[in-house]
Image 1 (tube, one colour):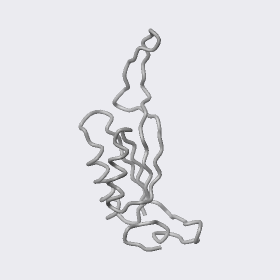
Image 2: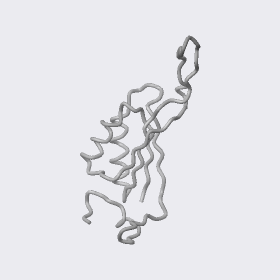
Image 3: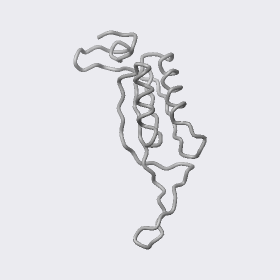
Length: 120
């Protein structure tokens, strides 16, 4: 089982969500987050003062899939939607999971992860 965390520009959220739903990757958590990286922010005038804005709004997708095949599909879809070639496109972090437990049923492991090729 694999967890994918993707931190991307806010304006890519709907495109990514739609692409993942078309793949039948239906289980995801989406959060608004703030972050900084190589983009280094920008300078803005606020009430007549120059202010450095170096923590920028982003969107974080958290997705758990049952196999490497599903991880590859998911990562590919995110990359295709988020890529602009500019600083700030985002990052994807991939983790191996020791276990997943579905609280409702007590199922452990891949059976506890919703995937398109599984039925509940």
